Each structure stands twice: as C-alpha cells, then as structure tokens.
Image 1 (tube, rainbow, N blue to C red):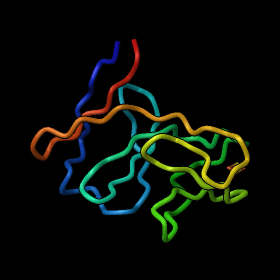
Image 2: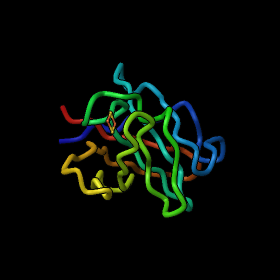
Image 3: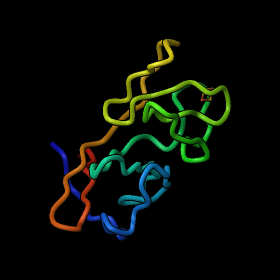
Image 4: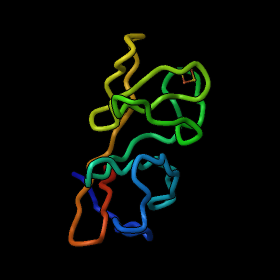
Length: 105
Ligand code: FES
C-alpha cells in the first residue's frame, strides 16, 4: 500500500526535462518532468550507485546515468540501453499544481 506525500515543489516549478533530486519522507528520490507528467525514480543508479540526477535526458526522453551512461525510461525504469538493470520507480499523482509521490509502507 502506497502512502502519497506532497512535494514542496509544484508542477509549475519543476523544470521540463531536468532531473531533480528531492527528499520525500526522508528518502532521496529523483524527479523528471516530461511532457506534463512527472516521473519519480530511485536517486541512485541500479548499476553502481551514481546519482541519477547528475545525469541528463537524451533526445528520446530517456534518463542517462552520468557514470557509465546506461539509459532508462523514466516512466517505468526499463533499461533501454540493454544492460539488464531496472531503475526503481515510484507512483506519482498530480492534483492541480501539486505533485504527490507514493512510497510503500
Ligand atoms: S553507475 Fe549508472 S550506469 Fe554505471
């Protein structure tokens, strides 16, 4: 069961296609606003723990890890460059201009 936490930052304040690290209920997570949606994902890369928000978004809208440049779909964590990892993702709800991220427990 997820508990949803409202982010301090609003939908309007989030910059499009700019990975942004934040803390939700004491947990570091990454955020990416893309085409009006917000995706939330683990702050650290599942490969070797690099900070995902030091990475960038490629021309296909995929999140690129800054260390070895593995690519992930921010919507579902799929490792689109094919190394076999999965980036953990969190559910997001947008209510007006407010953004909520769901954590388990
Ligand atoms: S630490 Fe992210 S690809 Fe290696």
